Image 1 (cartoon, rainbow, N blue to C red):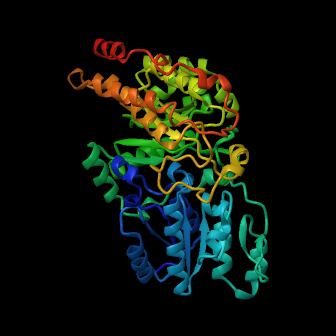
Image 2 (cartoon, one colour):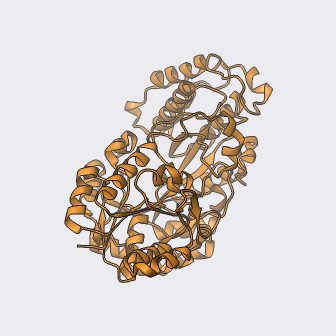
Length: 503
């Protein structure tokens, strides 16, 4: 029995790309919410939909725990959740409808519910909580589980609460809360889920067990394509010794062999990183980890401290090799910082990986060639390729809003479609992604497996498609971009594969 049943709407089998990667991580944001509730004396259980069939599993959890409240609480620390995928909304609404049919009060929290409250309130959700809501969730559950005569007055005082009023209008009672006290919560309540399926998935697919942790929440930068419906530009940082202690616990209690930090931007504070490295070393042998950060944060002192702490891999939001596009994105990043970061990380033996983004307004063939050249110049250890994705609340969304049709969200993380009018059709970007991925993979493949012919054919396909896949009526496309000679835009690939064999 539990008064509150927490769940989420991400089911791995619904996302083909992530299922192929088989790198599942527990719903950390959901577990922090459970920690907040249990710390306040509220009995709580978690229905984890990651592996189990979500609908039948949810019904079984309702039968087992008989909750008075169901909370569909998405993982704010996972980039997949932040993409507001359509299959997640569909599952959330199905779970809400099931709970409502049982007479259970339903609360929802997440990026998509923040952006599209009516989609949730019209499908079984009673309340939505916006912002950093651990404390608001505790207050709302207290009110709903307490004296009905006091409930109405208590609801009026809960920050971030969204609901329908008596007359059917959308009611936002108080602004979304800032919750820096999140950083002082006890460790996420991993004991409320079954960790073994995660261990098996990782061990079977990769030979080691990785799990997730966060040292901070939020991001203070203002890239105009990045949606921040939960934290805005706020940034909260946990104590370095607490984070190091949690890693030690995960290693000794759960046998974790690798860590992924889900922070939006790790290593923002150089002094914090140095204290963290000292704290990690005090526990003995370090656990290797990967992070997401920025190239311009990779100064020599920070890289040295990250290496001491166990950092093995850094994914940097490089986005584009065109300074014009970076400036249009308000990325506040200079390409010189990417070159410097790549050199420093290589010298330290830390894998340097790039997130790249194509399809931003103003990016034509010339800018695409600049991005490819940056990749070739710096040779990252891996890349992730995405297309510009307009989400509500961003400057990018406002820029292309008039072009958007009925489809406003990707179905899954492999959807990779443009919902605005980009310079090219989706097929061209898919061909570009495949060619660039193949080339980068070829640099680090065993010499016996290098296939320059296959890679060259992929680039030939890109060259052939470029003039055929151009869109009309694109935003801010520089006129000179269409005048590039596509046959000479790239260096011969044979030279690149010879260099790869020599290295």
